[in-house]
Length: 472
Image 1 (spheres, helix red, strand yellow):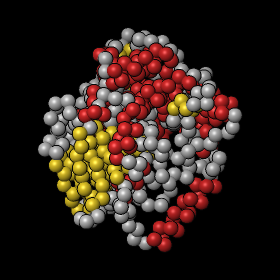
Image 2 (cartoon, rainbow, N blue to C red):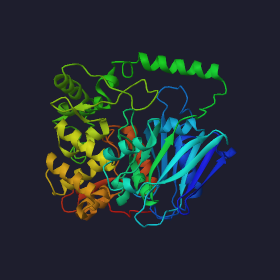
Image 3 (tube, one colour):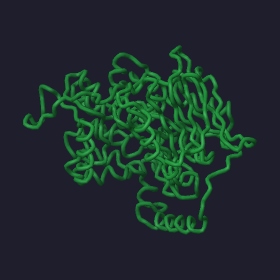
Image 4 (cartoon, rainbow, N blue to C red):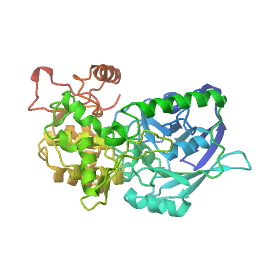
């Protein structure tokens, strides 16, 4: 097993044997351990002393179902704390198949407008991975839906891609790290925490993995592993939620929209209530029925990554049957839909595709739009206005840069009491007590609570949040 260090300052790399201390770590455990150990706590998140770490899961690259996952970690430019963000893609499995447990990006390239790419491949003669740099400047400033086909044309089909969009080049707090999906589109993300900007700040635009000749992941006890794998497959294929044509395969993660709405736990209009009157129009059931009408057939969902047998990734289609966006996950559907008072699936899909193309985290983007809707910049429910605001972020205009800073940054710019990064939309915390307790402990630890409210119109004056520092 290997640990690869790439120094962007002098454009060098080192392939090192995995230290014994990291032997039993993978995914979040690996990224957070390295960041905690090696990154100075007071360093600037977009400076040379921060490190960006990629680590596949402990069973990624094996036949274990739904295991093609990768964690990205760094000091977050959004919160100032240690951040891990997870994504599912063939990129994760390809990194694991090279027997790489961690890829650590260090230093910072000269800020001269030039961007670099990395190509990782297997060196059969040396029996280890190798790293090559290439000039990626020509891919900068472009929509990722334009970039990915060009990268595949250059390196061939047997690759996987990760990278950052223009949002990462701009240094936004809501910039994610993108990976390819099975159809070679830029739709899979480690979206949270602004890690795309950490990548962009280092002058790194793309990481291309070439899977040809990779040895794969060694399994110590194949019989025991296969026994556990079969049990997991059987459990997933027989449960009503995860089985073929079950809840997730039929309706996707957006099946949660109606469920949480009925429970009073669907965050609506900047978390001002827990029920959205338009929930049924944007729910997973509406996506399934809408596709059925537009395609004249039932369409079940697809896998986000190799080995995913749940297959919950959906695609929303235009009235003429062409693809509008993939995929309309619950979090994106909620953040850009209910949280903004928008109940039009076509407009939500447009916003999702724009976020994917610009490299934006849909959660932070939707939450930020919800905040400035409350501030009165545009009204709740104004889907065209929301689409225009995402274009502002993509263009890097002054307004776009304010919004790209995330909920707290944008809210403060419009005179709101805001602290920290936006929590996800699993449920309103008073409804989901377990979620609420977990978030209370997390934000008590890092000194932030993720709320934005107008100074002059608090919903509950007796419980108005206090503004705190954006950095520890």
